[in-house]
Length: 451
Ligand code: NDP
Image (cartoon, rainbow, N blue to C red; front, top):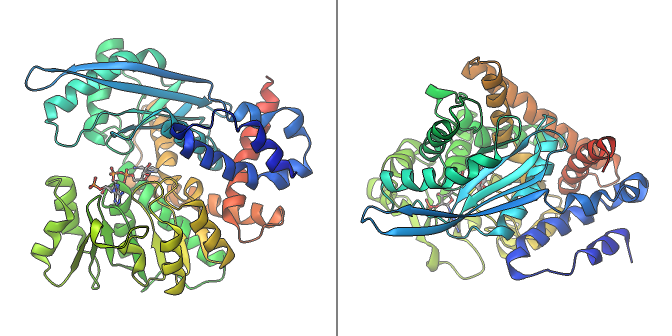
């Protein structure tokens, strides 16, 4: 039995359906770091894996609130405080019906290594609720956020745990959550990031994850000796915060993003996505992508159920670089085969864990430049840390300063990942490179801090 298999055996009990994505993430890391565990015995001696895969604490609470018809609604709220060896707990809040403890454990676990990779002083956490903001009025969202914060405020603080946004939690929700925190504590502190600029938000936070994924890709391609993205056809999934800003940055550097998706379908616009229209549909009108073809009749709309099961239309479109930016497990092995057959050169994960394990194996075995989420989408959390630094020093940085620091951070992460893969004998495998580099920094801190 290999070292990785021995480690996995220890965690097999309790592998219930709710924890499936968590085990998927954990297994990937355990296999990846096997070369490190073999070469440096101290990590096994200090039981780092056993300690790292168990959250420091999971806070689970009832959120009762009144809807617009004065009916009482009840949801469940969570905060998974996973590991604070490197700094205060840090990670987003997700409001979506699919949220449960297992999903948040998966996201929190990934967050530890992602935050470690940035080189910044932040630990790992994740939280959220099964509340669905879709179709709710602003007042309902406000009332839910107030009720959610009524419990959460007991567990967070600028030096303790600093939540941010994620799916379903944008500037509106962060604003309401922050307002309630302030009311409850009378404290004006940087306890949440992703705040609107007028009361402590950082410039560029909305752009950070998407821009960062493109900066990462540029460095990775350069280090691999591949052609740059300039003039290249790119496919992007999602039409939310990450996808919109990947598309924006790709257009700024001369690439041609031709797709976007939402939960109902895919847009393929061979002349390049109309970003202004996309922003209007998604940010202002919160409308379906189907509306896009009412303005651009020559673009194609493919409803999600009109593509053979197991695959997704967006990954069947030939491209140089692909950017899955919607949700987990949205790029399957069937999709990977289509991308490979169509000549894809790089795949960058903007979303968290969008590629299935089989798809990742296909990319790696075909020597596709594959940028895993925990490295490629770390730009969001990096700028969140910049927001914490600005709040702590009561200062405001310019857009250019934040962008420059983001670019440098993403270039450093890419170099760290590429070089670590090389150092540990897995050249070109950036999944292993990211896992080893992320694990090593947090593990060394845990050893130094004692049990
Ligand atoms: P948003 O909620 O802003 O957008 C998500 C988008 O994906 C929406 O357009 C949604 O469609 C679409 N979508 C959801 N499910 C599917 C599906 N099954 N198939 C196709 N499209 C789908 O989220 P973000 O852009 O903020 O986040 C996207 C991903 O990136 C998540 O995995 C998140 O965890 C990750 N991430 C986000 C960061 C950030 O800074 N925002 C930071 C790091 C990671 P619809 O419009 O119909 O709902």
